[in-house]
Image (cartoon, rainbow, N blue to C red; front, side, top):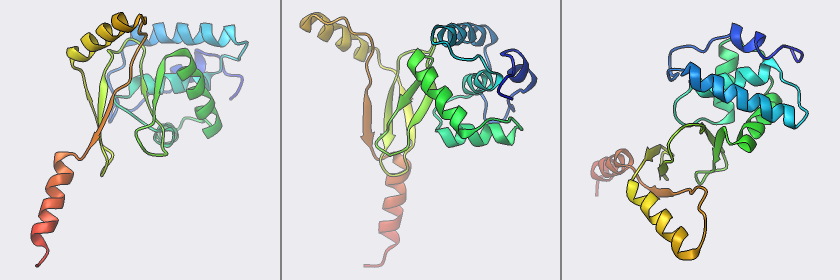
Amino acid sequence: MGGSSETGYAAKHTSSAASQATLNTDKLEEVRKLFTAHLENKGLRKTGERYAILEEIYARSGHFDVEELYVGMKERGLQVSRATVYNTLDLLVEQGLVSKHQFGRNLAQYEKSYGYRQHDHVICTECHKVVEFCDPRIHGIQTMVGELLNFHILHHSLNLYGICGDCRAQAAARSSATPA
């Protein structure tokens, strides 16, 4: 499969609709062009497997880890190795097409990033649920700090950690069910 063309492999395999976001074909085409230019600039091969991984990521919604991506592709009959998934993710992160997060666990989480609004995260320390939020006041603070400290701010990362309502409710139910 290593010699597949960029149009062959990925075009023949479509992601299942279940648990997949609607794929914006215009955005995907733009991302494919950026990825192609990145591969060419680095002198790397433009394989069908790499483009299939890119398509799979941009068809997803939310965060995912390497294993979820790999297993999801295998379940759809896509022939791709774990090593190719890892290497391609590294290339996509390097290019800015995918963001990599470390939400307080040893497991890296990824999400598509090209053309998506800046957002921040609230992470439950119990169940590891990640909730995205966007508050325009944070952008205002970023701008003010940049001006105050004479920095041109390129981007930011804000992760808030706590215990979600579901986990707090489960803990309260357990404590009230425990005999004194």
